[in-house]
Amino acid sequence: MVAYRETKEAFLPDEHLVAAYKSAGDLNVLATLYKRYMPLVYGLCLKYYKQEESSQDAVMQIFEQLITKLKVHDVTNFKSWLYVLAKNHCLMELRKGAKHYTVSIDDAFVESDGLLHHDDRAATEEKLLLMEACMEKLVEEQRKSLQLFYLEQKCYTEVAAQTGYDLKKVKSYIQNGKRNLKICIEKQSE
Image (tube, rainbow, N blue to C red; front, side, top):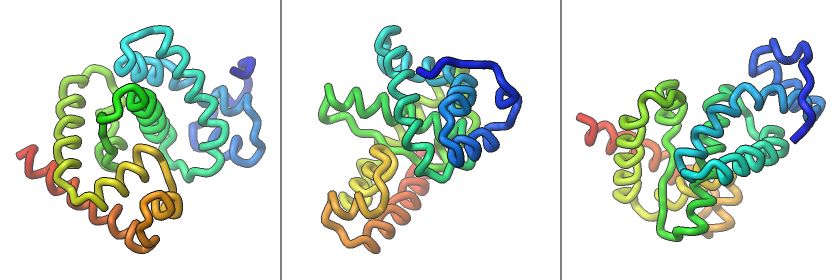
């Protein structure tokens, strides 16, 4: 990782640091931003890997991903976006070992502040299981499109290329899949 130095950036809000990094590409700015959330990322990785060493490695790998991904994504809430990035990283690594493990991400679900606190772990796990069950109920095109778009962070054109679906269909599958997923989750939660 980049050598960390205490600067005026340490006191700037996240959105200013994101903009500064995107414009200048200064790794010290990114390190300042990432340092704020390293305990969150480490805790999330530890939850999935259950091993300190693997979790520490993942924290470093996620930082390396940030170097390129933050430049190309439009990030409005860095904390939530980083949480999703870290979670996806962990799930992808776990998936390499367990080929049949599938989970997807619901925008409203992951961007809620409740997910970003460790004291609500049981409720979070319950929501994840519910979301996974609802994912299985989606039609294949919607499920596959959502998984590629959110879990693997592919853009629309990459999803279209990988699945062979028309680009307009991909956008429709993602939009309808999100809506159907939300409806299913709400019905199951009642």
